[in-house]
Image (cartoon, rainbow, N blue to C red; front, side, top):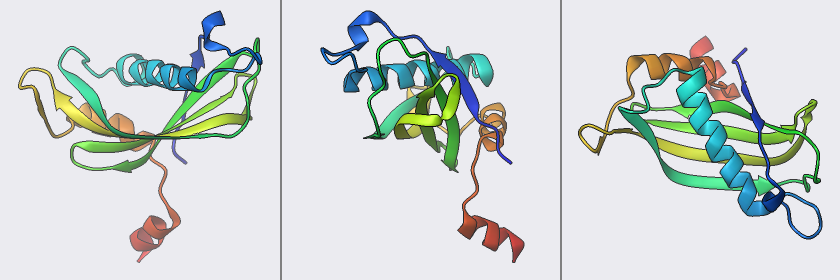
Length: 145
């Protein structure tokens, strides 16, 4: 079974709207902070050399996250190419990860900060991402054949 990274989400008072719900824009800020933490701290990617350029972001808001509730971000991998990765994030209740407030998919391309060009993923990054990869039923059938 693939791993899932879980990172705490630090919200600020200004992240909430007048209804005391997390503002839709704040979700993306929290997810971006979690992505940076995942690659830098958890996966030990040299962020002074490599970064991920976001090619596409898709977010689905499922229910409002109320003011004062501690939140967390979970991250897993949906797909993995030579230079690209499909990341999946959920914004969840920190004490109950089954309570999901928003779900987000990000298509990311690996970028070399020395050459300033997209590049193949370094081996260490690929290894770390493989551990987080969810295999679909179609892929399981193909691998079993």
